Length: 194
Image 1 (cartoon, rainbow, N blue to C red):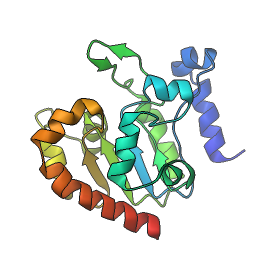
Image 2: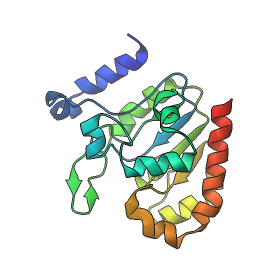
Image 3: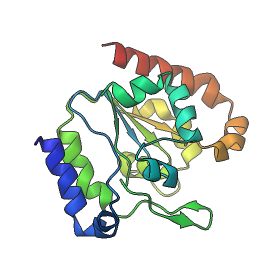
Image 4: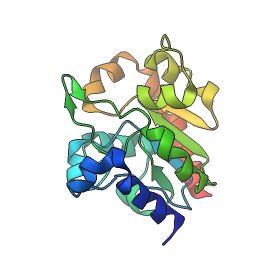
């Protein structure tokens, strides 16, 4: 048993997650001692939870393209950690998935991060991760945060969610593909090449 195993088992045993554990649903994330890049999104989607494979949908395909990495590197290299704001699918809301549960990241992120001292870049995908880690004010918009991404480097890089639902956003903000993505790909390439 490793310290990573201990945390995984503690998450499953936590009363906050009892409903999931009783249904045989395990927390979906990846943390490992060799991780160099950490991806923090909202929470696993329904398909990811059902297949037990994170980012297993069109959003994941686009994310891997943005990063310039193969499926093999993303899933099997051990260099990319996936630590969402909640490790369980939160359910469906009126306009998409429900938000991650409050307090979940507070409880479980730091113990995992403490075991991953080689993280060089953390990608913050979407509002929940950005507001939590960048301590943004309520008036700060996702668009402006992503546009000002350089002020959060080298530790953090805020990104819009790669969901197909954001096609209009991408079309309306060509600077993201012109400026942000090339920088992202280069940084990821440099970190993984070390």
